[in-house]
Image (tube, rainbow, N blue to C red; front, side, top):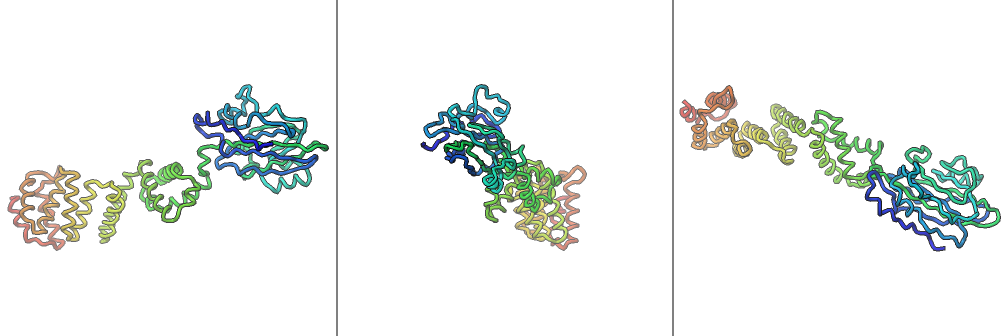
Length: 396
């Protein structure tokens, strides 16, 4: 008899499934010829990753018998495994009227060792599922997630014993899996713990206010983008790049971004106070500016560090960027005027002072008062004071 192909008409309804689908592409079909009184063990193809249930059909037919309706084509009318278990499929049956008079016993095993033992002693009690009475046809939905015996799936074996002591028989076995969309991605409690251990090494984790919320979001984002099998196949450099990208995206989705940026800013300031200017600058550059999160105060912070270290050209560049971001902040204008003064651009410094000298820097401090305070601080820190009098004359 020609090999039986599942017609796989499940396509007609699979688009409507929300939680999973009948895996038509990997349905299993096998014809087994079994001599009278003999036993055999059949390993089905590994159940697809994410299989939560599978349905099987067993038919015993003679040499001329043909199956007119495949199991998969029957399943096209059943929306999900619950439909089978609750009998909501109406008149649809999973058995076939063409089964013959021959009968068999069968059991389903989750280990080859247990199945081989059945071949020796014919005892079905160690099977995860078995029938007590010989049948000519049978079908059933098996729930893997609710059956502890199948916890080692995807490995499943079917064992058969031909109960006809005179004639050989032909057994047709069909198995179709229901694949849960989420489970099919390979992320379970154990694999998530593996990813979590990697995520906790990220520097980002130390900078958020709610670590648990952030890590939960990280797992969610990563699992949505990559299957576990894809994660395991990544090279170290690929994994590092992806982890960093997901870490950044998780900051946004978890609502931790602003807390993270504020922590970066405060950490950079502490580094600067400890005399670690290069590290302070690098932290702002890498974690804020390069990731395009920079605000006016970030450029001003860099300007302050450069000015403190008398790197006037770089300080000027940063203060101008801060002004571009927030032109109404007069503190940036005053700092730029200071840089011009130390860069021998006195005329430009004077222009700024003339423009803003009658304004207040803040609610409680005038432009003039802040300028005088800054000049005193610069003098204490050893900055050149030659041009201070030129500015003070403008302010008086």
